[in-house]
Structure formats: structure tokens, C-alpha cells
Length: 305
Image (cartoon, rainbow, N blue to C red):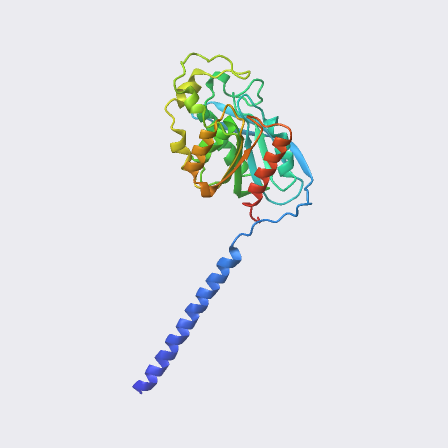
């Protein structure tokens, strides 16, 4: 009798083990099934695109009602797409990256380019005076925009990319490292990011406003706000992939700043392109090359929705 009970118990144990193994197999199969695959868009394919105005409204840390004007360039198709938020440089405008917006939208990205509030002449964003803007108010703008764009019905909220040029690259890096959004940003890309800005203003005399530079003024609060900023200590808080495109003739952002950024981010996570024969701002065929470099970077990190 005892022998029979032992056999029955052994059989039951084997059955339970088999069931458990089956569950593990099933769990493993489910994990494989839910893995995201890199999205494939044939090289010859181009989405039909449309451009429309888009405003982001929020209240900043000083209690000001900020209204960010920008334009969305996007595929004309009823499905979800990854999004790229494009940040302009010093005294720039939303229209500065028209080539990039159109190029990337045709390849299946929702691109939002905008005016930082108070950061340019004749800007269309409102709520902040020109002498009130700083890299930190720009970061506030960008964080608010990320929150808004990820809520759009045709945006895949798990795939929000940031892109910026010059000062916009500096702010892109600063924002991506912020604990509030760093996990929401899939990857970042920058043209000639102005990582030199804190050093340039470190010892500057603080006045009500500095002399005009490149057609615009820098307010005293801007200078005051970044004098103690150790930028490279901050941006390393962002742990995902980074793309940097820089011109070897850049007299504003020197090579040492790009080298340092690569070191801080980690060479294994940075895709760096040095364009020989061009400087700050690129232009002409160099801009086409840079836009293509960033596009390939994005496509290698874009998943099926």
C-alpha cells in the first residue's frame, strides 16, 4: 500500500514539474513574442506629409503663463509614429529646421519644431520677456513640450526623441539628463552642441543685459543662472544613446568640448560624426549630410509601434 502511494505521489510530482516547465516555456515564448522589433521602412518609401500649427501652454516655475508656438510636420496616415522634438539655437526660430522636419517626417516621424519663449527676436511664443529667458527656462519649455507631445493620439509615447542645434543642443542635453524626463527620452541627437556656453559666461560681467551678440541680447539672469553650472557633471545622467554631428572648422564649439562630451556619455553610446571643411551652422550639402546622419541614427533605434 505504501509503495502504491509512493508511486502515485511520484507521478503527481512529475506532472507538476512538467506543468511548471510548460509554464516557464510559455512565459519565455510570451517574452519573445512581446519583444519590440526595429521598424523597417524601405529606402525608396516616402510618407505623404502635412504641416500644422501646434501650441503648448503651461505655467512655468515663476508662475508665468507660457504659450509655446511651433509647427508639427507629420505623416498623413492614421497610425502611431515616433516623435522628434527639435530645439533651435541662439536667436533661432521654429523654422530653422525645415529641411530636417520634412526629411524625417517623410520617413515616418512626427516632428515638432518651436520657438523657445523669449529666446529670439520676433518669436511667436509668449509669456516671457527676452531678458527673462535662461537655459533653465528653456529646459522648462522643453519638458512641458515632451509632456504635451507624448499625449497626442498619433504619437507613440514610448518613442520620444530630442534633437537640437548649438544652444538648442546644449539645452537638449541638459533636459535629457533631468530626472523628470530622462526615462521618457528614447535617444538624443545634436548638431554642434554648444557645450561651451557655461565656460564662455563663467567670468562675464553681469549687467542688466549684455551687448548684442549675433543679433540678440543675453539677459543678466541668463549669465547668473549658469555661472556655477558644471555641465559635464550633469549631462552624464542621461544613459541612453547619443548622436553628435560637428564641423571640424567650428570656431564656436571647439573640439575639446565634443571630446569631453563623448567621454562623459561613454564612447560606446555615442555616434559621432565630424564633418571636415565646415564650421558652426553647416549649410548647403553639409546640412543634407548631417540630416541624413541623424535620420540613420534614429532609424536604428526606432521600433515597431
